[in-house]
Image 1 (cartoon, helix red, strand yellow):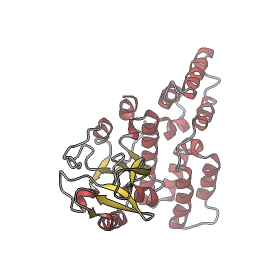
Image 2 (cartoon, helix red, strand yellow):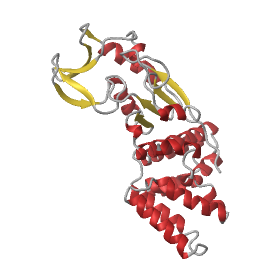
Image 3 (cartoon, rainbow, N blue to C red):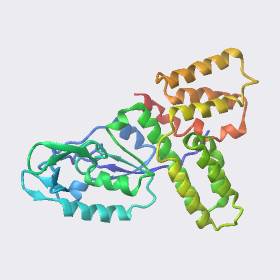
Length: 315
């Protein structure tokens, strides 16, 4: 039903691309392996980029006098300045990227639950993001950013893919510099944006009506601000259910009692965490095709990412 723009994703090089972990091993990820067919990956290993070898002595984050440092206990090397320099140079060159998949709990790439040690001792004080991962989150809060550990979770995978593909679509609109393409983007994503934030969805609709005759650059800048704010967090399951019920209204007169009951039962199972969202979406999509509803046919809400990726959201 839908043509997809290929997302651009920066990925930790050790996740399936090169045996560059501190212990000389490579991390296997079925998710990344399958996704490789559908996105453009840009692998990077910050630790190798600052001159550390393969294999190498482990590094860790330590807290000294209230300041976080990147430290290699076996050699006594303080790698903080080298890492910060690499991160600044690398991320300042990043352009047109839709997401990141980073190594979980890594002192460089981790985005959550990275151990922080108390000085040179072995006692841990707290946890946070790694040096590279933290800067990614600070600089690109609106992008699809996850680690390969969290992506083992079904809901997180669904949310990551949905966000990744709407961002790649929007990037294509920006590159087109076409108001018509922006209007089409908003129209096709209306239900998905409604699930994220109804008020912002309406605000974006008012913007693209363009009563003030803004230039494309001015308009896309204002639209992007609201759009990014809307997708910072994934939709609540209750918001998804509201959109599912809204979509059901398009077919309420054509469906049999049993068909409606089957769908409503599936929605309840989604509400209770028994079914993933795409089960309900596929039921609705079958009716979109059956009744040839052109408006709903174009709604990304029913096919937020390629259907070929559905198996990796359930494995």
